[in-house]
Length: 268
Image (cartoon, rainbow, N blue to C red; front, top):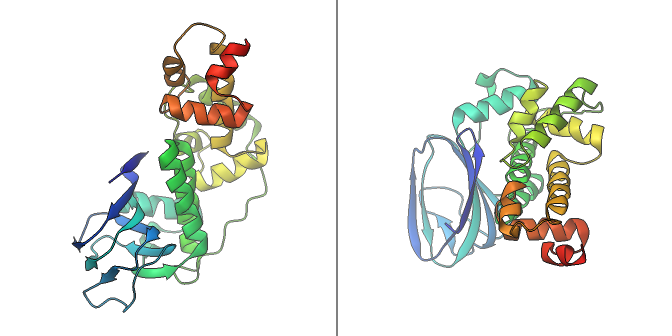
C-alpha cells in the first residue's frame, strides 16, 4: 500500500501496487471496489471468473462474502474503496429512500463503468492530496452512480434542484468555521440538516455555487493568509488551518492565490 485515507464510519480507500503475486479473497467483511489505474494486463482471475485480463480503467466489485483467486504476472497500480455492509446499506437507503434490505451489490470483474471510474479517479487524487472531504464527496457520488447504472441496480437518478434552508446554511457555515482546523466529514455536515450525504452535497452546491470541499478549501486558504502576516512557522499554520500537511497547504494555497505560502508572506 502506498497511500490511504480514512473516510469515517469504518470506510476507507487506499492506493496499492503489486507485481508477480497470487492473491486470494476469502469471504471478506465489507464491500470492496477496485479501479485499475495503470497496467493490469498481467492480472487474471483463476477461479472461474471471466476469461479476461485487467487494463487501466476497468472496475472490479467484490461484495461482502465474495471469494476469488487472482494471478498477477506484471506490475499494476489500483485504488480500493472499502465500505462496511451497514454503511453501504445506510447510504443506499438514505440516497434512494428505499429499504436497506433491497440493496444488492453485484460481483463484477473487469467491467467498463465510466461514471463510477471517474469518481474513483477523483478519490485517488484526493488520497494523494490528503483531501478527506473531497474523497468523501467522490465516494458518495460513486455510490449513487453505482446503483443508477442499469447493470448494477437501475435505480432512478436523484434529481435535486433546491438549495439548503436558510437556517441550515447558517448552521453549516458556523460549523465549518468552528472546525476549520480539524478533519471535516461530509456526513457530519449532512447531519446538520438531517440529510443524506448525497443530497446535502448537491443542495450545498445549489446554495453556494461550489462543493463543500471547495468552500472549506477556500476558507482554509483565507485563514492561512491572515495567519501568514505573523511569525508562526508555516507547518504550524497548515495544521491550524486543517491541512493534512505543509505540502497539502502549499498546493491549495497556490491554487487559490497563485503564490506559495512563503512567497505570499514575503509580499506582506
